[in-house]
Amino acid sequence: MDIQDPSFWRAGAVSTTLVMLVVLAFLSVDSMRYITAGGINVPGYEVINQHIGYEYDWNRRADVPVIGGPEPLFGKVVAPAEAAALMRTGKLVIQGRACMDCHTIFGNGAYYAPDLTKAWLDPAWSQIWMPMTGKATREEAMVEFLMHPDKYPTWTRAMPNLGITEAEARATVAYLKWLSAIDTNGFPANFGRSMQ
Ligand code: HEC
Image 1 (cartoon, rainbow, N blue to C red):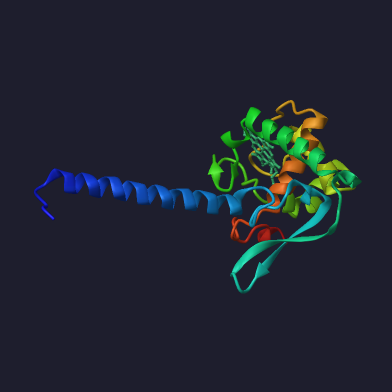
Image 2: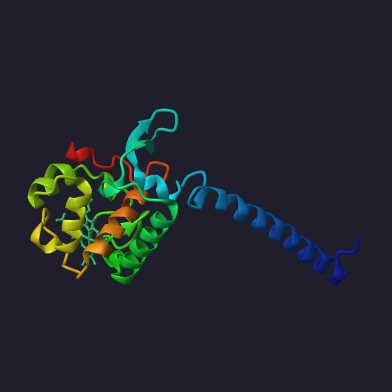
């Protein structure tokens, strides 16, 4: 071995790059198992047919979503294809209306308005918005709020009316319900505690 020889260093660079490529490929495939819908941390879209709870797990020392019994969104069980179509529309509404200019999801976005990752589970829907909107269920109150946020302010900062249609609002609520079922290792911490 001659460390003065450039080919020694070239061979070192090439072999290190190749080994790291293999490691990168492994880590990418491994991450997909966790982050794909239907994977380890992210439930499939049909989870919107179930009750979703959020409970403190003493082993993990974090709040974890608990998928419970049947609780179809808007009282109607949706098939996987229909659930996927709702998610697509909901995602397009969130991207198209630039909700992240004010809100965060998984902590990403702007810090003007509340984080939406667990918005579905916010006790404020039953405690404040259901009575305020006169709606009998959380999902109906959410649709009403998303269509007319300017009519139901609860805070010093109000959300503007973004011209969301009823179909768009229902898909967005479906998206938010699915989002809340994702295991985020306890993010956001102490969610909803101050309201209880
Ligand atoms: C211009 C800033 C702004 C934009 C853009 C915006 N919001 Fe909001 N949003 C707010 C504010 C401020 C609040 C808090 C309102 C309140 O509590 O009265 C809010 C509240 C909410 C809530 C209730 C959260 C909770 O749990 O308390 C939801 C859900 C929501 N917004 C969804 C959306 C969605 C979906 C979009 C995009 C379609 C969006 N927002 C776009 C400012 C915004």
